[in-house]
Image 1 (cartoon, rainbow, N blue to C red):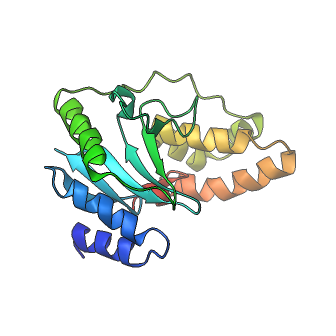
Image 2 (spheres, rainbow, N blue to C red):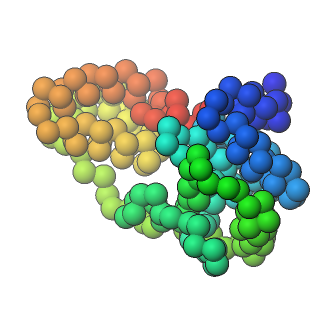
Length: 198
């Protein structure tokens, strides 16, 4: 199934947002962006770089602009969905009663394309060193295969596992998370890989 067919299927299965998603898609199709599917959502790229995407939620749908922090936002449409977490991505939330002005949407997308061509991109900040919980350190020290497998993971995957285990408040929850993670680590997969490979 091609990406275009996947987007057809994504829109076809909608009940609440079908018309509005199709309207946004028609705007995207007027641009030079390539239509793809990433994380199960229609995504629009320029030379392999994500510029925008559409997403459906229970109470709203959204137009995501991946480097939206650089947009002028003349019409005051954009929000940071996760303040303090999301740095560059901005979201235009569309609710059921909202009318979509295709011309304004096109303005935002064209500005996003121009920014992408100009290389405007927020670089990821250097992250602090991974803090590994004691329960996890003990397991790594007692299981050589687990230790080697963990060290072969990318720093991002190592951080995901350490944070997932460490953020549990209770020791028995940490223990059950550790048990779940050990097999995945030995397989060389990341904790959240299944969400990244749609």
